[in-house]
Amino acid sequence: MVTGPAETAFEFDVVVVGGGGHVGLPLAIAFADRGLRVAIYDLNEAAVSTILAGELPFLEDGAAPVLQRALAAGRLHATVDPAVVSRGEHIVVVIGTPVDEHLNPDPHAVPRALDACKQHFRPGQLLVLRSTVYPGVTRRVEQLVADEQLGVEVAFCPERIAEGKAMEELFSLPQIVSARTPQARKRAGALFGHLTESIVELEPEEAELAKLFTNTWRYIKFAAANQFYMMANQQGLDFDRIRGALAQDYPRAADMPGAGFAAGPCLFKDTMQLAAFTDNSFVLGHSAMLVNEGLPLYLVSRLESRYDLANLRVGILGMAFKGESDDIRSSLSYKLKRILEFRAKQVLCTDPYVTVDPNLRPLPEVLADSDLLIIGAPHRAYRELATDLPVADVWNMLGQGTVV
Ligand SMILES: NC(=O)c1ccc[n+]([C@@H]2O[C@H](COP(=O)([O-])OP(=O)(O)OC[C@H]3O[C@@H](n4cnc5c(N)ncnc54)[C@H](O)[C@@H]3O)[C@@H](O)[C@H]2O)c1
Image (cartoon, rainbow, N blue to C red):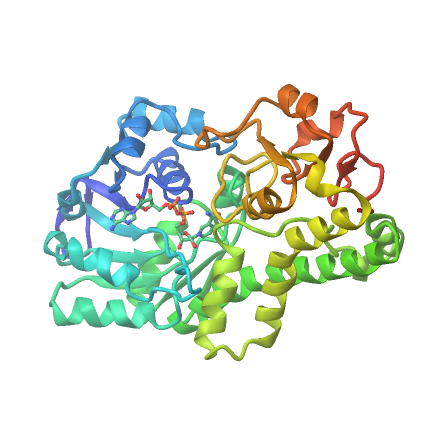
């Protein structure tokens, strides 16, 4: 039992709204592992049952033992009942904030979720927004809280972990903390001080942009590498060989990424949030999107110029949006699949981790039934791939170059 600033007793130190998700769950169990009493509130009943059974609803390195420890210690509760929001001192919101099919962000996603459980808020709570939000959402939430006279303080503390690395990065990355008042900032800093010693303070509007700039910067770097890849490849040259040479003992180029599908639920949509925020005048962001999203079609066109693709069966190895992940959200392997379904004789797909797609086939079957392979996600297992088939390997997983 902890005591909030208004001397109100709260049963939980933290309630994580959206705590069944890819960033909410690691955060919840990280807090529990540091001794806090944590409740997860999530709409997803299946995820909540899985968590209560001590299992992860998705892959996250090192998270399963932490979850099991938290449950065994009685420090983690999970529920689909929004009333749990009334029982926590800190309410951390990490619901999804995708862009729609027209690439519009939804600035109402977080306010809508809060509106749905506003009757459960209690004076003295600290509401921490942790979803990546469209700029201005924090102020909108502050207004909602004021209009409803909830007596709740608001902070915005963006999540910056990479999926799969949460259990390491939650404790090692600096935490950006922002709030309108020094007291709310102090409370948010104290909360995240349980995870990391490195707290970086900003104003809410700065922090909203800091998060979007972080992801967009990464997305643009991937786009630069992908564009260089296409330039080199167009000349029959191996981009990875060129990159290795130019970065050798040359620190200023050491951060040049390799080429490959830059996809997933964050980088693309956060770049598009920033584009919408600048009234679609974000030339660099849109260009990065065209390059990264254009890579599957570029590869197919290149293969068409070398092979009689319409009469070939093509196997895609790796359907997740990145290596060692089971997450297929916004995966470019699926975009590649859709293109090939129209332009090749047949498409066969496999992935060692993805469990949500009933159309996937085991790797040996795909190897046996394909004429040509494309590596879609750079899962480590593919480094050992033994095949005589031609492989389009933008990632250079096989060490035989990237030329397609
Ligand atoms: N995935 C990442 O690597 C990553 C990294 C940093 C930041 N983020 C940001 O974190 C946020 C969450 O991303 P995610 O990948 O965890 O998404 P997710 O879809 O995996 O998780 C969101 C969870 O919220 C739940 N939810 C949705 N609406 C709800 C509501 N009204 N009430 C209660 N629960 C609700 C969903 O059921 C789901 O379990 C996004 O804003 C994302 O941009 C994600």
